[in-house]
Image 1 (cartoon, rainbow, N blue to C red):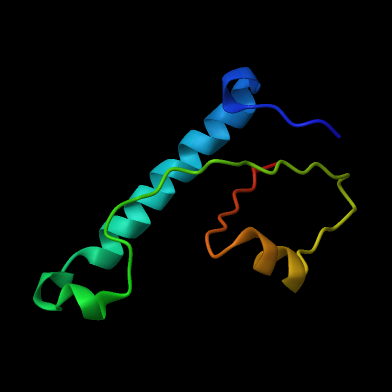
Image 2 (cartoon, rainbow, N blue to C red):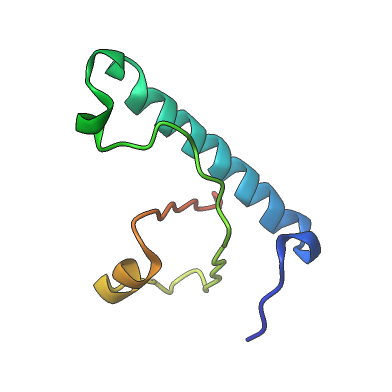
Length: 87
């Protein structure tokens, strides 16, 4: 399967990335609010949202299921977000 950059991605993928980016920004904002009293070296949290550089899009049939293996999570790093388009 070939991959493509965001510049050439279909609108549906770009909209998904935009939505996930909004969620990511909100998550960082909510976890850092009130952390000002904790010394920076003790926070162990990102204080800024880091934009996603990849989007893995999966499609499957109505009665099918998918699962993510532990090895996929380890190989992709610590930042994974999922978004499921409602039926």
